Image 1 (tube, rainbow, N blue to C red):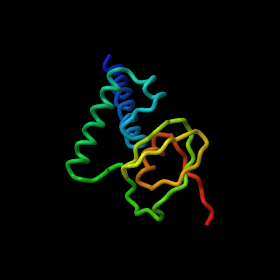
Image 2 (cartoon, rainbow, N blue to C red):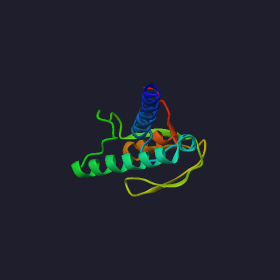
Image 3 (tube, rainbow, N blue to C red):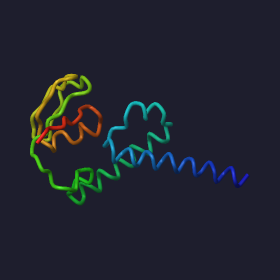
Image 4 (cartoon, rainbow, N blue to C red):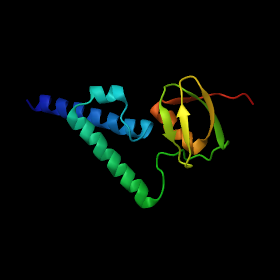
Length: 126
């Protein structure tokens, strides 16, 4: 009985750690496929963990999800993977993302969109 309890606890801890890693990889929005696979308790854990990370990030005045290495380029070339519609950017503007269209956007505006899988980075030759 104790062995089964330990196995179940290990399973639950593993799933919660995956949700934590997913928060850092995709940002505050749980991807649709992960939402379908997660239980109500796991979705609640994700929301709570996101709130905790966000409040700590605001308290210290630093975006913890941002790249820690300095950017080499101010603008990035990206291609929209999904019809997202109009998206507000951090710089105060908005952009209408349509599947297959290419855009040149500020790095800080596009980081979250890349993590969420809405756009992909277009490799440029230099």
